[in-house]
Length: 110
Image 1 (tube, rainbow, N blue to C red):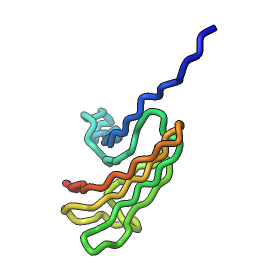
Image 2: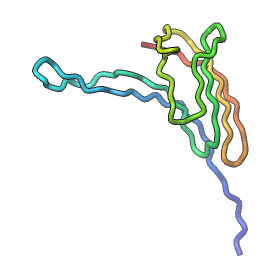
Image 3: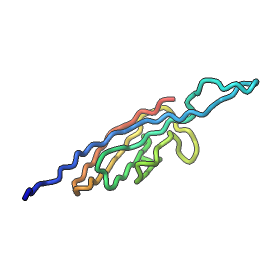
């Protein structure tokens, strides 16, 4: 009989997804796609729960999510935020019960 231990590979990545929307010229011809919106997501293997918070330079919470499917688009209350560095705090619990608390900054560029 084999007695083993399950090992989970844990990793966290920030991904940036560029959504492109088709644009047509006056003749109805489709032009090359241009980025319409860029989103920042948290992705990872074996993540059970997560809490991502993004703060502006004054410490105001401008974005929060507990879902890997919800990303930040660089806005707060529908208003584009200025180009600058934003602090993040990411609290993750993996399926084996271990936790990670990551802190850092993200620079928003347009």
